Image 1 (cartoon, rainbow, N blue to C red):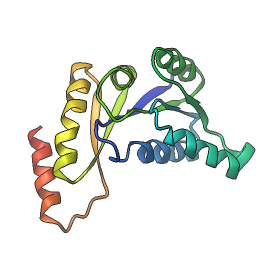
Image 2 (spheres, one colour):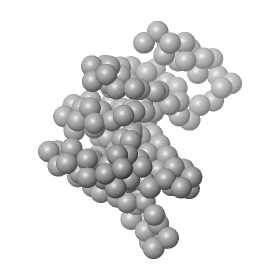
Image 3 (cartoon, rainbow, N blue to C red):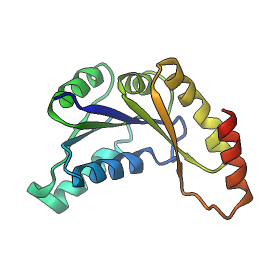
Length: 161
């Protein structure tokens, strides 16, 4: 088995990377996939989520989790990829080193984006890294209020970049 690696990456903190990674992991697991998550963000929010999930579900939790950083990421991702259908990596909020490795390893990169100018500006370095690494990449709009003019302006600007 060689599972797909999905990386949630975005230079800006608070964009929703961890929430996206956790929700995607649960959704795929509920569809019957064997899923692993890797937390490479020094803040460790995905690991805290996993700890709470284990406390709540115990042996019923079928998601595998690992928290690594630096040079150990590639080896851990490849190990889990052999055991699982999906490996979901929660990248740190910057577009360098560990995040670049996570993007390079990914079959798919998801870039969460709130509909604000700051989030739009901040996503450009992540999109550039993903383009350089030739990664399949999608922007995932997060916390969207379709009734605002700003949302439509941000969506239009996304089309430009």
